[in-house]
Image (cartoon, rainbow over all chains, first blue to last red):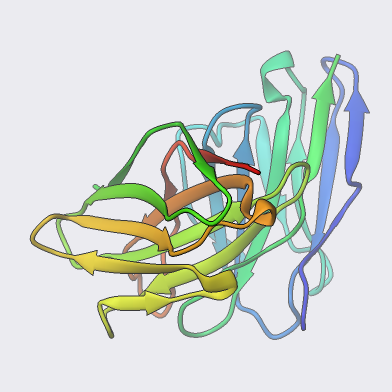
Length: 112
Length: 116
């Protein structure tokens, strides 16, 4: 069964550093998403991406965040200057026509 | 705007007992509803989804959920709990947006414990 692949599975970074979280969506999917889950809290929508542009973003997705699909296969989330409160599990998801997300297994980001 | 309320952050059942995890939603337009399961240190796995077809939806691992519009509920049930069902369960709602499902709004989750 096709999978959404996220790398790395765990990343530790120092406060103020830039991080890039990578995702390889399912190849024929058209819609791409990032969600995050702070430890012990609910999963929150960050951003959706379609046709090479952001289609929707939440209040969390401020100027520190950006997304890119640089080469037609990868889908990346960049956090420009990480803060302690950015520590969370970040999930990538993709979806084709119709209904049904496929989530990746997540990247646990720890900011120290 | 849509929202989801999961009643009970922690539910404990005995092995073989009925599992009932409660979810109520709020949506101004017909919603799509989902249940996801998350095992420790893993991602989100879709259990089942309601997308305006049959109101009783059967999912994986013996779970099912019934969409009740009058009660704005989408409770998850399983007749007989198994130890392997211990996990966190998330209810989510979305509204169709163009050709896509729209982004998901999650509830806070219910952690299910299964006692031997």
